[in-house]
Image (cartoon, rainbow, N blue to C red):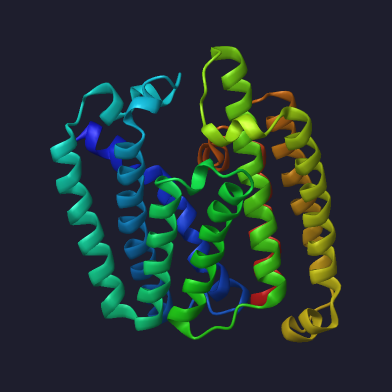
Length: 288
């Protein structure tokens, strides 16, 4: 089972928690029926996302064999055959899309768009500089809007902007790690990486870090948001956002270890602590 788990990457399912964002900000997180629907949506997204990982691995077997980390994955290493991978892929996609169809037609359409977008990404779009960054970022935006669609919650422009900016920031950090690995291994890790360099990535990271913080501050003090949550104290949560961004920049620029955003979010104690404090502070403001 271990190679199968490595193939479908369940640790990456944490990304699908973005579906919870609309219900959290709407103050409806503890309405059991709604949470059950969202959890079902997360399962559907996770199944399809795992199928996409397999598609990408099947497409990149030869390239991954040259990657210092990816060469240990089940397909490049030979732990799982291509035929077995195709069977698992079919099961995952059929299960995920069927579940989505039972939940909500619009949700199914969004999940289908996510699938098609990522198939295009695997078969060439990821080799187009800048476009590759936006496609990955759009995946997070689609997840967020999918959560809103399931419960009939409108996702605000503010939230959409911040999700997109944060996703771009995380993708840029991951691309930087590719460049560092490429320099040390003297091999092409990602085709699109040849169109980037550390100066460009560092400049973009700095810009997006600043814009994310400013956008979040503007969000917390905007009249619309203050009225919606009936509180003028949301700006306090900015402290944890700034601390989290600074720590991620430290991991990226100083420790040069930003290859897996999922791993960082799960394992880095400082970032985990800031996220927990942000959730608690927001919870107190929204739900009390």
